[in-house]
Image 1 (spheres, helix red, strand yellow):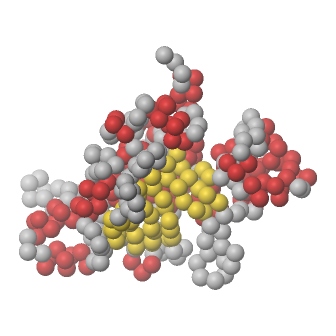
Image 2 (image 1 turned 90 degrees about the vertical axis):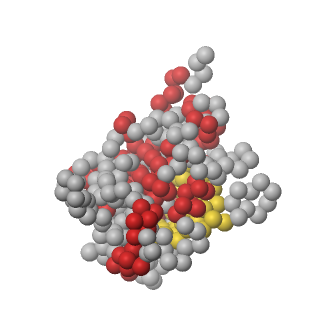
Image 3 (image 1 turned 30 degrees about the horizontal axis):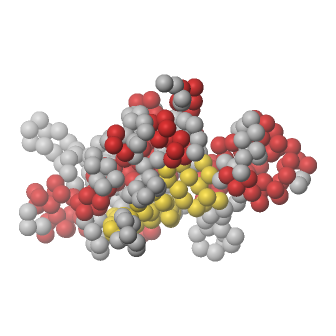
Length: 349
């Protein structure tokens, strides 16, 4: 697009032929444009231009698929029940939307009294190049708002423009979720037992490699503790984590503690398993630091700018109302751990 005044050019990657045809058929082309496209697209404000897909327009607005149950405006209104300051940018970031993809949006009703229901987002790229499904749930009872990433797939084809975008997508989603007051994102990381049939599930290896946290399966720990080499590696990781790996509930040993030892990290990558993954969305958390480091390494490798640093982003939610006791105690309540930024000052005053 070229603006008459000043002659400045703006690029709209992802504006495909189907969108063009809907625009041309619209009764009011101006209203359609501002409702579906909006202002000239810029670099993602949560990560910057770390990947070609994030260099222009990654933060939306979401392009709905033809059969969407609800509109982006209705989905945004649902997000505003979590945080009144939610924007279309937050909707795109939380929904893992990227230019060229379309999202099916559906608001599902709750089943019981007080159940707020959830927002379901199913996003697909052209020719099965990209696909993900997730649901966003508002606070309910004592449970804080949450995101469950249910499916994520990027076809490993050489010319697929979405390849290499999974880490920036997760970093953007974490940072946008924190602004919304969503303390945690969870999902299951699978390992396909039959990788030669269809597209193999490799999340059990992929996500810890990128920096996601998760619960190390107790069966995996016990199996390797039975071998002399594995036992020595895991016990060393336990020592490096100051006992946190093995001296807690065995069902809650995390990769943050296992990977204190590079040898334990290599042991996992040589023998990954399915597990429950999660990320703590707060600035300074293990996953935010680890994923940012991974994104930076890949960006430099491919000649892209490094991501926006955690220090440059807000340390408080967009609405302070979502924090019940203040940042320090709120984090402890929702995650069960002391936040590293506040470790020495938790119980002052």
